[in-house]
Length: 200
Image (cartoon, one colour):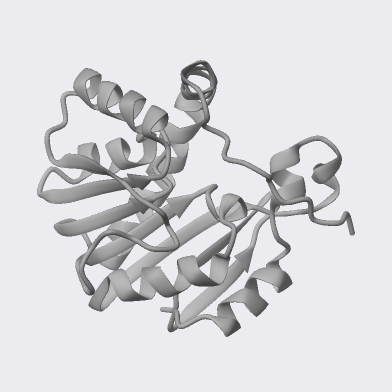
C-alpha cells in the first residue's frame, strides 16, 4: 500500500487556485450533490438545517439548497477565498436558503445540536486531526441527526494524485472513528472513494 502523504497546507490559498478548482469540478460536484441529495431523501430529511463541512466553493451546498427549498443550508470552510467564490456561485444560482461561515472543521463555530444533517465531500483527507472533526460532527447533530461523509480512498491511484496520497484507507478511517465520539457509523468501501454515514 502506498504510504500516506498529508497535505502541508490548505488547497485554497489564493484566488486563482480557487477559481481554477471551481471551474474544473463544477459538473462533477453537481453529480456528487445528486448522490448526497438521494441519501437525504432516503432518510426523509428535506427540511431543517444541513451543514456542509469543508464546503469550498459551495457547489455541494448549493445543490442541496436547490433540491430542498425548505431546508436551511450552511457551508463551513476555513478559506476566505473559497467562501468568496461560494457566495458568487450562490448569486448566480439564485438560491436563497443558504449561508456560509468561516471556521475550522475541528472547532466549529456553532452551538451543540444545531443541525439535522451534516455532510462533507472530499474534505477528510485535508483535516489535520480527523478525530476532532468527527467529534465536532457529533456535537453539531441534533439527537436524531444524521451524517454522510465521502472522501477519496488511498489506493494504487495514489501514484497519480496528491489527494489520493493524502487520503485514508477504509481500515484507517474505521480506526479513527473508533477513537472518536461519533456514534452509530458505518464505513463503505467504494471503487475510488470511501463513505461514512449514519448506521441504518
